[in-house]
Image (cartoon, rainbow, N blue to C red):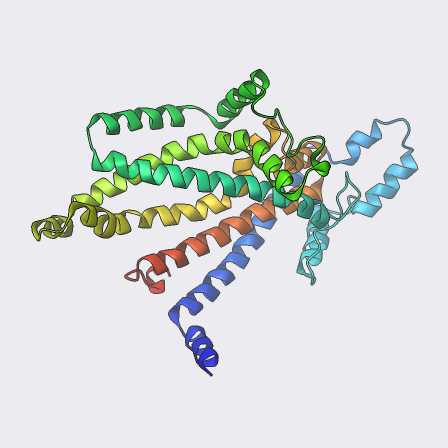
Length: 340
């Protein structure tokens, strides 16, 4: 009975109505993204079969057969409708990859775990370092520790991600402490369960750091700026005047409000799981979705490119929704109606 009452209370709450509204808006957003993405793909010259036409071992009859099989002989609007019908089925079907001759969903499923592992590890490392250092910088404003941390953050933001990845790749090649690339060692299958976990973790160190450096720099500066703004507020001055310990003022009253804007950023962090890991995957030969998407674009594998773009858009919608709901949990003053 208690579970039933709790469920009914949730279904009638503003949070549930807000979630449903956002999901419906997300569906419309994904539809518009699919139309725009498909149109851009169609505007690019050529298609996957152009590379096969230059192969003398493939007959013109086989080219025509593949053209009909992939639906490339149909007008663009018909191709889009055929693709959309596959998505609307249950379970959804992203079609067959032109290049790999396999279901797109299976190809993505094989790679998504590696990308999520790398990207989530990067987010954890970034936030666990940037937030405390941002607090230290704000609390010690204009002191040597604050100035030193600001220098590091400026340097970190000044390095593009690919330059950072190149530097770490050079480090891997010049020292035996880190593997050069891939996700596992050659003899990975012979390791124990713990050994396999440690082997993957060893290979993750440099790609994770390469992803974290630039993100850390920006997040630390945002944390510092937010906390400094909050510490100047009247209610903080009132708390200090009442004789509350400084640690309580900072870590209970100020920090809770300073962290709110960062939760919104978390939505974009979740949305960048695919794009953010792309550079590290290419440089460190990491078998994730980034490399798969790059190969699909180069090969003009239409179904695979569409699936990758739609996954990125879906993660953006889902990430923003999760961030808004988390913001309501962290700060009860923020109601669902404030975001509508």
